[in-house]
Image (tube, rainbow, N blue to C red; front, side):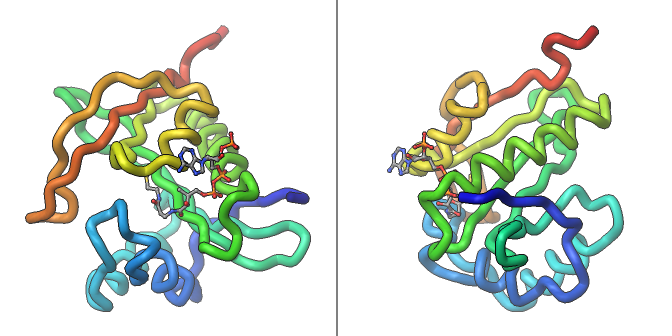
Length: 167
Ligand SMILES: CC(C)(COP(=O)(O)OP(=O)(O)OC[C@H]1O[C@@H](n2cnc3c(N)ncnc32)[C@H](O)[C@@H]1OP(=O)(O)O)[C@@H](O)C(=O)NCCC(=O)NCCS
């Protein structure tokens, strides 16, 4: 793997979103594929400046190979960041999600806004749980999530302290 870079999500990136979140295999651990309407709504949020969503670009070829992003959410009475990632099937297993997620974490950290960033992979999502462990997240607990609405899944709560080692 030569390397990847993150680019802000663009106006022309709906086809990438369709391949990532409109696909049954890709959304196996995410409650199933989203409707065209939901994808279009998501696209409009992602392309807004400062959305925190990025496309992952293969530096060698310039190809878009996935997405990574972070957003604010309420969690156990406070505000935290949540982070999520996705890599197209043809590019999986090469360390791309790990590299891209590390870059997104560095961006979140540089904002000095929220101390904690959480990831909530399904307990069954082997690769995503491995990524959390590898990137230094601490496992807190597994709990029941409703995502999307009406669909219940058990997810692990992983947390990283963005302020650790702050001078
Ligand atoms: C999760 C996903 C992004 C991983 O992308 P990727 O680029 O293949 O991930 P990486 O290559 O960076 O790392 C995967 C890690 O998981 C490990 N892994 C792979 N399959 C595994 C399994 N079944 N059980 C445990 N670990 C596994 C790999 O060995 C690798 O760790 P290593 O680098 O220490 O060897 C990709 O599978 C995906 O997009 N899935 C569908 C969408 C999704 O589930 N998103 C996450 C929601 S939280």
